[in-house]
Length: 74
Image (tube, rainbow, N blue to C red; front, side, top):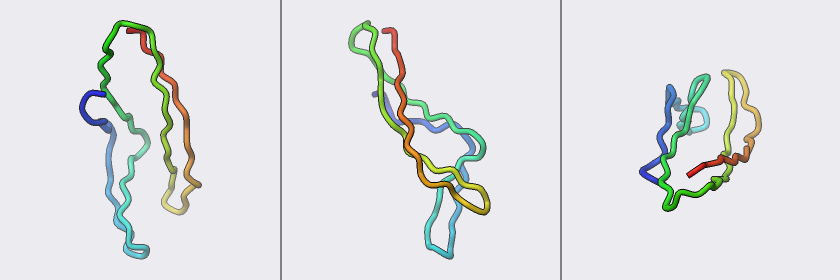
């Protein structure tokens, strides 16, 4: 992995005084970008998971985990 993951989207920080937390939220869409350098020119896959939660102004759905599998062609 090269550098840190970059988040491309409109980030909004919201503080909820009633429960004492600060939440970071993205409106509508966010792309998480991670650059990688391959040591050899070979076909390979990058697999992982991302955990997220979707909310509206009135409620939140339970957190969900989504698996991903990206194919790289060296």
